[in-house]
Amino acid sequence: MGNASKTWLLGLDRQIWILAAGRLLSQIGTGFTAFYAPIFFVNQVGLSATQVGLALGSASVSGVVGRFLGGTGADNPAWGRKKTLLAAAGVSAIADVALATADTFWLLVLGNLLMGLGIGLYWPATETVVADLTSGSQRNEAFALVRLADNIGLGTGVMLGGLIIATIQNYRLLFVLDGISFVVFFGVIWVAIAETYQSHEDVQAEGNSWLTALQDQRLVIYMAVNVMFTLYIAQIQSTAPLYLTNFIEFSPQVISGLFAWHIVFASVCQLPIARRLNGLSRPHALMVSLLLWGIGFTVMWGAGIGAIPALVGAIASLGILALATDAYTPAASALVVDLAPASQRGVYLALNSQCWAIGYLIGPPIGGWALDQVPAIAHGFWLAGAVSIVPCLLTLRYLETLITHKKTEG
Image 1: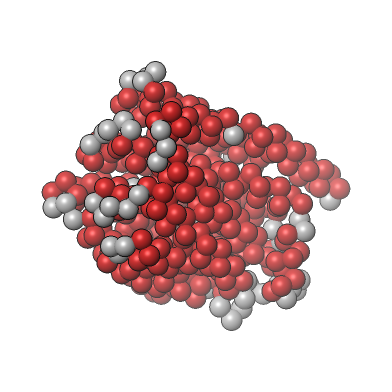
Image 2: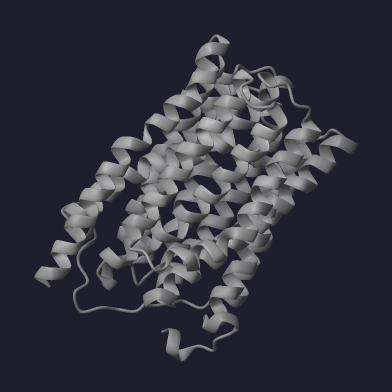
């Protein structure tokens, strides 16, 4: 498929660049809400941190369903990648209507359930399009490029969101703007993205395809570690903003600046890190990411207890966690594509995306619970996160052995 389409910068298919542009626009909208929603619903609507954590986590319940439908649809010739992406953008726009009007716990849950469904449909399809249009070492850079677009959009949204809050103090407007961004993304997909699905001789019935994937020991072991990665990322988006606001007592303007720094730094470093880690195996690249997560969480703990000056510690922690995310995202997606038969890319990437659903189901409620406890538990939460990388490192070492053995057999 990649040879049939024109290539642009970096030798990548032009549709990857168009998809990246659409994702950038969509992520601007997400940036409006990602870091400000917990602060708004706790400090202005009056819900507890635990309730908001549960509501945010509820998106993962519908996300499981969405990822199942998204992976199945992406591998189904009747739907394919494009229609699945269109459905994802449409459902997400409707979710923002609910979130913009939410003033109770149950309305917040409804909005998050719809958003989870949209996100679930989206990820397997968009990752499969990138996989369809790339091969070999180029794939890692392609995944890094679309993640870079995500980060630039997210950073722009965070900064604009902070400006809106500082000037007109209207949090609900952020959800309206997020909904508009999904409508624009729908238009980009409709006009500029072609269907990349191709039939394969070894295509399987839908149920058998999922069962076959789950019988791949390498994939299952990777998924166990990937849940932890996504749980870590959930803490940056749902727990860290409220922790920095309520325990270190930074102002909304400082919070906005900190997370804008986090995202801008991640954007600047995304492609260089992807290229740097391209010389390592995928599991080794993920081990580098784990070490960075451990260091970043430890620095956050140090800033919280006063062992490090608060602002310096917050800047350093969010910078290190940006590098950890940069090392993780391209290597993780590329590893799953490497493991997947061509006819099952959608299903394999859907299972990869299910890890995000599980991580976001567990992560926000755990973080919210920790922040509702005494300060010692809230601070210690970050240190516990740092310690949790140890079993993950050991698991990835075992996965590396399995992959090497499989290649030798082949």
